[in-house]
Amino acid sequence: MIKKYIAVLACVLSLPIGHAVADEAPITLRFSHVVADDTPKGQGALMFQKLVQERLGGQVKVEVYPNSTLFGDADELQALQDGKVDLLAPSLAKFDQYTKQLQIFDLPFLFDDLEAVNRFQKRAKGRQLLRSMEDKGIVGLAYWHNGMKQMSANRALHAPADARGLSFRIQASGVLEAQFAQLGAKAVPMPFAEAFAALQSGKVQGTENTWSNLYSQKLNTVQPFITETNHGVLDYMLVTNSRTWYAIPHKTRTELEAIIDEVTFAVNHAAEQQNQADRQRIQSSGKTQLVPLSPEERQAWRTAMQPVWEQFTPEIGADIVKAAQIVNRKQSQ
Image (cartoon, rainbow, N blue to C red; front, side, top):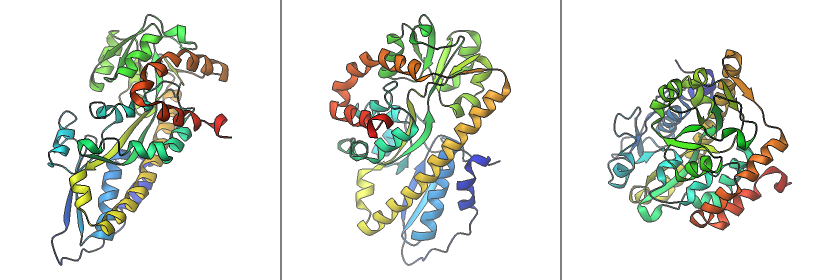
């Protein structure tokens, strides 16, 4: 069943599809992803397919392969480079082998909030990062949100020192390892599917993730405290193969870009609605205490993380880090 928070996408998908003009065989774009259809990303792929059929049906056909039915996490980017698939939407951390610049989104407490992330992604440096892998044959088309990350643990984390001595599950990332090392904690990279059992058994005592991921995997049921840190962003990048993309006639490509902008707005709205709804579900469950941070407490975390910023700025680029800092609300006013 499609949830309420993706109604904006589902409504579009319920509209009748126009008939394609079959003068000649259309360009086929194979869109592979690793999640279910009834997620914001899954619905985004279907919305893109539908709008392309309605507006470019005689010129372009989109085939959607959800739930790793075509390629999985481990091999989808190689498949894109090999021309075996045409569109993907992996998490930004998956691109580490192709560019270090996208580590900007993992730098802890860099962005004030999701609106700051949006401002950065829409401005010149954020748009520039979409093209940061073109020399590897990968073209970024859009950022799709999962959401801002929160930090959970078996004790309340009000101050950076509260994390000392704990082990945290992370996705593989040099920045995230450095983040927890700076706190005097241990980072344990492991697949997301193993996180629940590791937290339940005490193998790790904490983790970081978005509200929707924490709730969907029931991680809140084995984590007594979640601190509302909003300390990093978990996003996807919609990408394509450069040979495929630039072989599409310019007029058609421009129309596809307009459709992608429309779908991106809907996906990001749906993701934010989902996160807010799941935050409320976690709070209402009574199993987890939500720990807010005062402005002074948040600043203490940000100050504690400065060495991590300094460590990775040479890899990311000082100009990119500066552009990210400028978008924060206080500095933008």
